[in-house]
Length: 79
Image 1 (cartoon, rainbow, N blue to C red):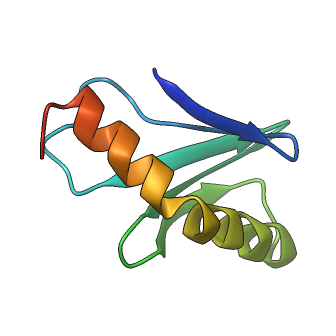
Image 2: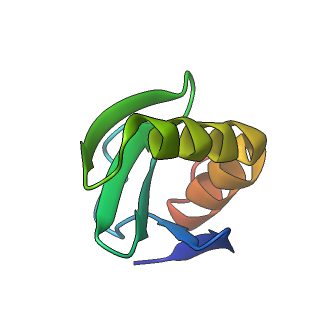
């Protein structure tokens, strides 16, 4: 599970066997977990986060989308 970022108490990562799906990022902290599609940034699944936290996480994903996409492409050898 490559970790892309740790920011504001959140860990953003992806699973190493997900290269066949569109670019997305998993986010976890404490008891919360969610998954966002990156481009466009759309919530796919969540558990343990309220709407305020999900909005904050969405903004983090949007702010770091280039890094997430580059990391995904590098890891899965896509260009």
